[in-house]
Amino acid sequence: MDFGDDEHIDVCQNIEVGLKREYELHPEMSDILCVFALEGAKTAIKKHFGYAKNEKACDHPLAKGIIEWCIAIGVERIGKVNDLTLQDFLTRIEKVKRSVKRHSAYGTRGYYEFIKDFV
Image (cartoon, rainbow, N blue to C red; front, side, top):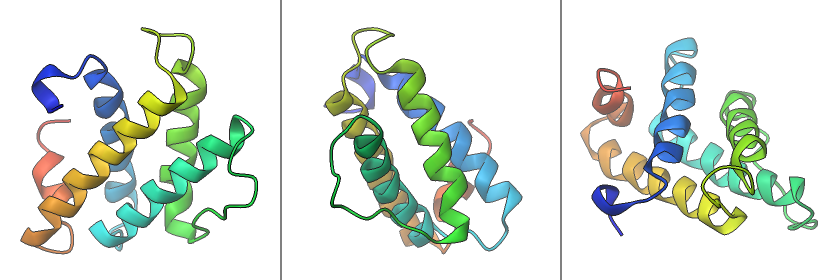
């Protein structure tokens, strides 16, 4: 599945809005930290829905905003909009995370440079 045929592409866009905001609020935010935050968000949303009880989420202060943003989107949409499941949501976080990793090859904030004019 790529971005062109994703029935939940709007979820990816919602996540990216929050990422852009965090990059703009925190000039020290890097793509690597963003990746850790997205991993933490996956754990945190699973915990919210009663799973991953023994897993630990990223606790870096700069990751907090991304994690909270993803939880808010998940709570708002999982089971409520377009039959989005927890697994669907985790897949979209992972998709965005792969994009962050891919664009980090262009600098420590390569992903932000990529999305800032589109989101």
